[in-house]
Length: 215
Image 1 (cartoon, rainbow, N blue to C red):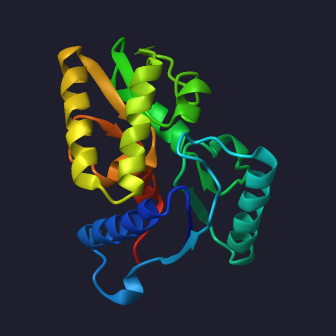
Image 2: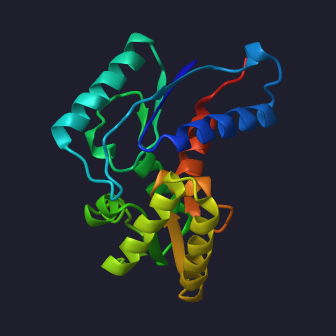
């Protein structure tokens, strides 16, 4: 099996995802080097702004460059670590990060109040909200979205301590309101330690692990 991982929106999550995947494979039974699958990690310098917005034509070109590398390498399974560009990726080998996460949401929860923490682009384009069928999505106000953007920016700047404080306060507030929190931006995985939230990065990692057959 040959796995392709596209990252770069943002860059930090790619390194963390690869490390977490290898650790998970080790726990699954991979010990010797030859027991791990072949993995190609492509860090591509995508040009998304801090709210997740992008130039569509330029981003499609960026994606196609990355997909060409993956297809030329004959990968069997593709993972891309960004929610905002999901709609632009058309590849039969790709695991759709939003589809996998929303399937888990509707499997675990029924008639619950769902709060999605994500980039402004992901929220305003309803990339998650339009796919969730069994639960009630609580819309975020602009002031809430601005807080999410602040946290993302702090993570990208390496200011994880400050990001964690704001994030923890936010989760605490949402818990009081009985919201089920969904992390719909890959950057949040870098600071999240809360097992009660559904993290899109953890979901796609588990989906990938299910497909990997160790040697």
